[in-house]
Amino acid sequence: MADERDPKVSRSYREMGSEEPPRELDDAILAASRRAISRKRSWYAPVALAATLVLVVAVTVQVERRKPEEERVAKAPEQPKPMNAPAQVQQERQFTPEPPPSREPPAPSAKSAAPVPVPVPAPAPQAAEPPRELAKSNEQAAGARSDAARDSASPAPAMRREARQMESKVETPEAALERIAELRKQGKQEEADKALAEFRRRYPGYVLSDEMKAKVERK
Amino acid sequence: MLAYRDGNAGAFETLYTRHRGRLYRFVLRSVKARGVAEELFQEVWMRVIEARERYAPQARFTTWLYTIAHNLLTDHWRKKGLTLVELDEDVHAAAPDDPARSAEARQALSRFAAALDALPPLQRQAFLMHEEGGLSIAEIAAATGANEEAAKSRLRYAMARLKSAVDDG
Image 1 (tube, rainbow over the protein chains, first blue to last red):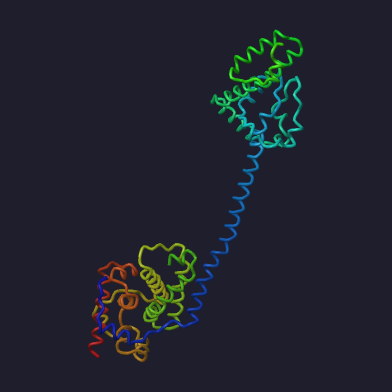
Image 2: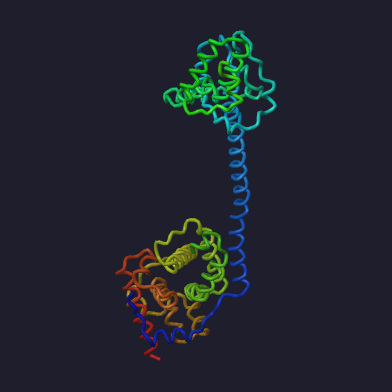
């Protein structure tokens, strides 16, 4: 900054005095500055509050809309599988992800109201769902179908289901021995011999107790 | 100013305290009537308050403040039918164009004050901005809407005349 000041001129100028604005003027200006700020804040708080409320309502609605969908997915494996249900319905059920059995929550009261499996044409999937499901929007239903379609693209759910079915068909050694003992009791010695041979082939290392031997071996 | 713009009322008070005396004297010595000076001084600060949302730090706050003051003074002189024309040295060498005002100044102020009072408005503004506001030539040019050469010339003429008044004493 080029300083053009001349010391003599500056000194003379300072000697003129240093007038100040009157105190009332100071107060008026400072009060005006504070009023301007408070005017700005007067709309800020309500707007911030309104924005917060809108956010809370939006999140609540979103959570409520997702709940039925999650419940439906969790309950789907527990639905009885009708003997002659339409193929499409069965297919949709196959695509429904199944939660691990050990982690299933206690059955809700709605479970007891589930229809008893009878050999009649299966109701529509929505009819088997709790009443709450009926209120679900079409959009959510479409979302569920698209989820199912995604699952169908992956072989994992089908493989898991098959594995579970296989497990249910496989007899435990104890159950097999009980069955053989029952055959002996009924006098079906041939069948019992075959079953025992099959048992020994399947469980070569299984040690039979004396009591069990007496039950399952031919006397 | 940015802090005040963002809602800090204390920041305005700091700014005001820093500039109030210098700006007040700048306005008072430009118009020479205390009532008018107070009115204009208040108006300058009202403009600052109103313009806080639009304030962008493109220049020093001081330059911006004196730009507002200059614009208000220009409006004031226009309303009073005074024009801000450049006066050459010969014209200035003559007695001030308002004898009554000069007489009032002579009574109230020293010889120097009379010389200052006698300066053409634009030269006096340039001197006051430099002396009170601490503005550089470039900042005076920006505040008064002139180019730097014009600002420098005004300041140089003002200094020469005031120095002459001091030396004559």
